[in-house]
Amino acid sequence: MIYDKSSGKIVDIIKNYARKHSLWIVAYGTGCGAIELPPTMTSRYDAERFGIRGSATPRQADVLLITGYLAVKTLKRVIRTYEQMQDPKYVIGFGSCTINGGMYWDSYNTVKALDRYLPVDVYINGCMPRPEAVISGFIELQKLIEAGKANGAKKYKENLDWYRENQRKVIKNWKMPDYNW
Ligand code: SF4
Figure 1 (cartoon, rainbow, N blue to C red):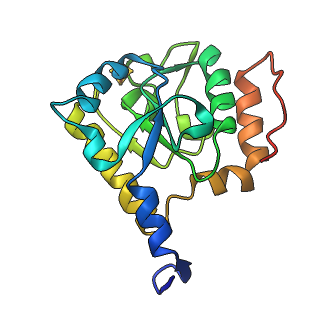
Figure 2: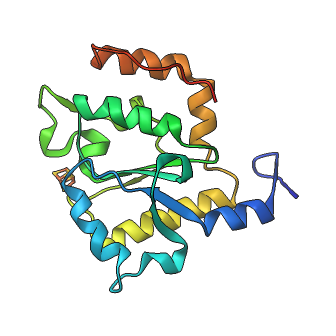
């Protein structure tokens, strides 16, 4: 462990080093940006050389990748998926749609700013972001993890009431188990 003067916190170097090189993602294609994942994960861009790979279930995953626009209907499933993931866990918003709704900015049924509903650690802008941009977003996440600053999950727990209020405003048929871990 070392003391980081800039943040005033103790950073666990070895744990964070291991975490940043083992990023298993939930393969949940929410929007059209998901089409960039096959080239990112396969031999041409080979994301696995950075320790990035797909996970079979949310409970084994570290990263929830939101690959574009989210319909209100999908948001409920995504929240449930996120809440089933174990700590440490991270969220990447992938594509302009996750930042401000993108080309769906005035749609009645699309979520505009993902970070009102889930704690986004890194955004990757573009429509749609190429594999180079996707990898660059993951490298940004790795830097945050190494510095002990990828704290989205902690923020979610600390501000759960605020997130719940926002989530319930758009999800009318709310029937979900309590988030308790
Ligand atoms: S940002 Fe572009 S590519 Fe991504 S989901 Fe939105 S419209 Fe599709």
